[in-house]
Length: 131
Length: 309
View 1 (cartoon, each protein chain N blue to C red):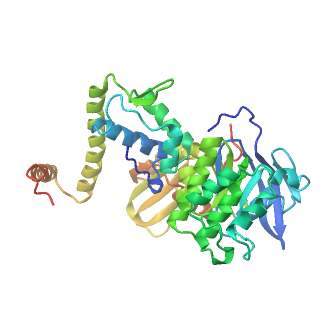
View 2 (cartoon, chains in turn yellow, blue):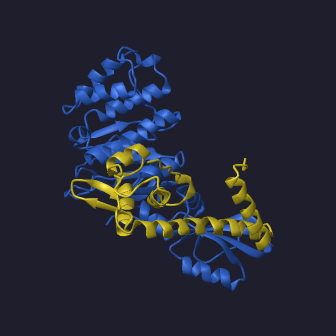
View 3 (tube, chains in turn orange, red):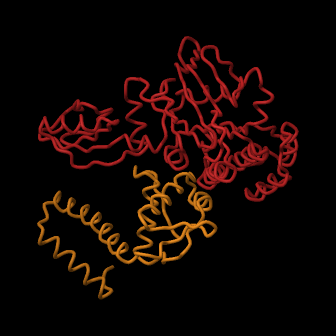
């Protein structure tokens, strides 16, 4: 599980963890039933406070992304994952779009031009010609 | 991790004031450090961090106010208090003529609970040469040896004064690792001072900021993050100096865009911004660096203290 923490952002670290675990689940890099590192292990690996990891795991459990069973650690939830994953994908992309749109507005780039750019770039990725 | 059911504070400081040559080095500082947490103390050089740590260690006696460590007076009960503290000083002074293994044996003599197995493990982790003389060690290796000496008796309180000061990224990681392990594996308490805001943000449960000898902020980091807001405000007109906004701690920027830091009084600030015809273009959570700057600029006053419930 690859997670990158950047304290400089201002985004609370537990929230960075939550976002990244969701992204890993939504993108299939963490699969249903897959086990997450124990709290202390992840804290030592990322060099962050163990209470922060505990809080992120707890919130992810409440949201139904993770589940923890006595004796078997914390795993990615088996049930109801695909709709959640779809919802998460949309949430993640909506955030990115909002940032893009606000930048476009600041640069006075019109809606249709922005949409054209996205289409062009999407096609470029499909043809492998995006560098 | 908070598994301890003994909730007596590890460190309790009440109304501590210290004056050097008529200048207040510490001015009415009160704080409480609960067990099994990481407590980060922030402040510029000369803000009073080291003076505070010397009071915890008992090398300075509280002249006004009180200091309790494990419920004891660290000056009167120096021996029993110091046996439970692992301390790494900023200058990391060690006898230069000794070899690494001699420093270890020397330190061991002071701490009956010294864990030889753990000491060897740390020696290996840090890749220190047992036979090297202290005077031939690099700055980073000296810090690692100092850290080893502070950790190997598995102290109940790990006390670090600017541990990362002047060190490269690798040794800084060793120090952060030691802090996280101390609290994660053993539920012990860490109190450390630093001017490296990212490190403090990474590992701390509680954060205190000291400026000009006064405690300007002291709270759970989560709570600090929840109650403070960063607003980027766009004004119709150009301002040549910082506009005054209700509820804002600080205001930085130039021309038409200014960044405000608010503490809990978001409604007040939002209403005022709307009233004067400006608009908020961005709203998010400030980093510790933003907060540090905001509080250092302010007229000194205690904003929150001892809310450790």
